[in-house]
Image (tube, rainbow, N blue to C red; front, side):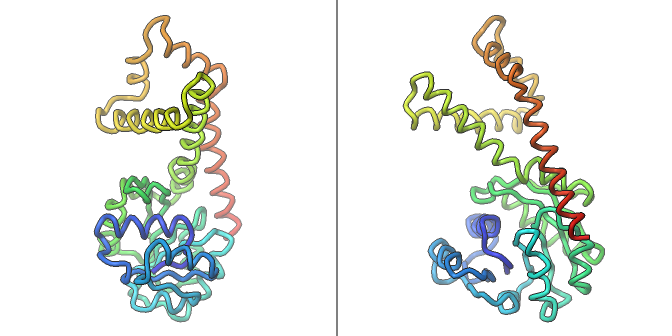
Length: 268
């Protein structure tokens, strides 16, 4: 069951269905307060998915309850289920910055796992980190880990590192989308048709990522392989360095991490 039916809940539910971890949409319930969003979910998942504006109704008979709301709404979401949730139901929070201790304070008898996912779960390429709460056991780990791995790559980490996961991979797709858009714009500036430029840019990012993951080489080494002396690539790399591209990306990860930490402190 999901409390909240926004983009991240939709991505995870879609990933569970496409991976076969959930065989039918009738096994998924989503508590979503906004009628327009419930209509969107119905259009995406079909009539079999169980949709309601009553969170207590949504979690009935669920083995896992995903808290998939924005951090500012997490307290209201937890209060809505605090009287009906059962101790055997695993609570999985994907709310950015919200600490395990905050969730355990409201849901005292519940085992809790905090997860920081990202939207590539839509296509089975999620990158995530997770941490177990004080009441979560190895059985709960065995329950959630295969689900996360079915959606992509997942790492169990100390909770203190989940804000960094938020800044890097949680927010990271947006950084990459901006880079793809900018590369595409550059191609258009140099005369390529928009559809060709966009496809080339996206495929280049995909191919480069697969080289890092599958060849096991450092990105710097792979960069050096394509930068011939006095060639086109080193000229482009020089332009990126002058624009402080590398520092800008590092600053983005750091800023998002700090914001995640701020969200956590506001709930403590």
